[in-house]
Length: 407
Picture 1 (cartoon, helix red, strand yellow):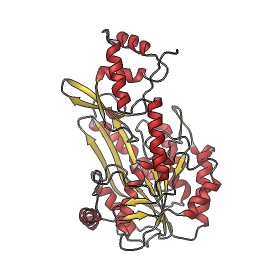
Picture 2 (cartoon, one colour):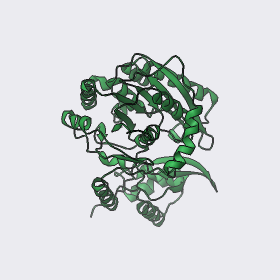
Picture 3 (cartoon, helix red, strand yellow):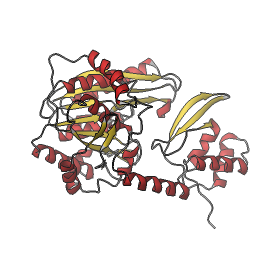
Picture 4 (cartoon, one colour):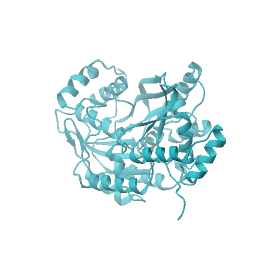
């Protein structure tokens, strides 16, 4: 019988301070795991060994070489059992569990809210009470308005309460133009995808009901795309980057017949393994964006396009070493500004060249959504509405985000 070679699932591994010193929190980006797991620093070393190629014995030997202390087989088995129970191992048991969840999701008539009551208020009344004042005090540039036929926005997908000012600035501007008939939402898939983009036909539930999806555009895309646009549909189940925009759109247009939406998750199509790849040089991503642009150009309806996109992710939580200094934050801010300046002139290739020049060392999470927006819309100018860097002193990390109007 072949020796077992455990494989850990893709996880967010977050450094934290716990009793006894530094520890790491393991969080499932797909939200399939029932709870987070906290491990001491030495045990996290084993996660790198659980890559599907090392046997348990090899992992044990490598641990001894690394730390110079013995780790018994019993302790490793206890850890593996804990990870299995938490659904963090890519095992037969997990695959069966995921298959059940996926079958259940595909059988549902709508995409249910998964962050209501946590990231934002669950009921319609509570949401209005929280967000109407934010919208009323939001400022907008007096000399800039969106194109009513093709309004474009870059908005955050960061924690909706922490980034409330940015969200409010974006939706204040959108609310002052003519209501769109359709809104294309370009979200980010925070976990691996088999295809560059993933669509769903399911209406998105919000505290105000369900936002219908636009069958015309989705059907056109599913026919024209060079891959199955529904292959990764399951990732819509828990992904917040589309949900947050859908909720705010429904809030904004709650007193009318709301626009239909086209929910699209963007994968990391600008990467192949560890290398950056220019999307403009062809491939499935380029073909999909060409098809989407053609569908939108041929459509006479008012169509808004929103890139749900955060910017730099720096610090220990994202693999950097050392403290998060003001100098590092300033360098990150300048990189964000340079990227947004190119976006405001419609320079999609310039955005990619900037990432390539810096080898994406600032981890621009929202790049695929911003690039896609610029690839399908004719952007001539834009305006920065709001920008912020959110700093977490505990993990010495920062995430930045902005709202930008484009026309």
